[in-house]
Length: 184
Image (cartoon, rainbow, N blue to C red; front, side):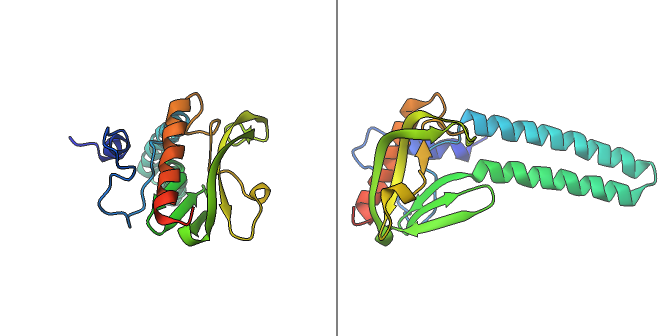
């Protein structure tokens, strides 16, 4: 059985000299795999959803369809949350760079990008308020100072915690997209 989510990462690990190994560059793609923290949390949420779905079936069998519908709705919300959690990250295409958050998505056209740089700075650990020293990939847009921008990727987020080499590959891939399609 083919696993399409594994092929995207292998395309960036080729030994070819091309930085952007894709033919269809208008398609939005994530230049890295989701990290183990993000995948693990989504798996736990889906496991919880399976228990809630089982509870909805038991409630429906006890002749209480309205309560079963409520529990089924809760399971649906948990499943949608887990799938949305897996989509969180940075996506690139020929049109720009897209930062997908859990609730909001922001897209910046490559025409608006002045620089994409990696810097040592205090970064949030797993998105929590606690900060630690780490690397961050920041995107500087026209008319904004680098201090106003939040980082695209950090070495301590859910995708790259304890995966420094994966952060370097992802940062290089985003910088390559910016160099080819932007004015960087």
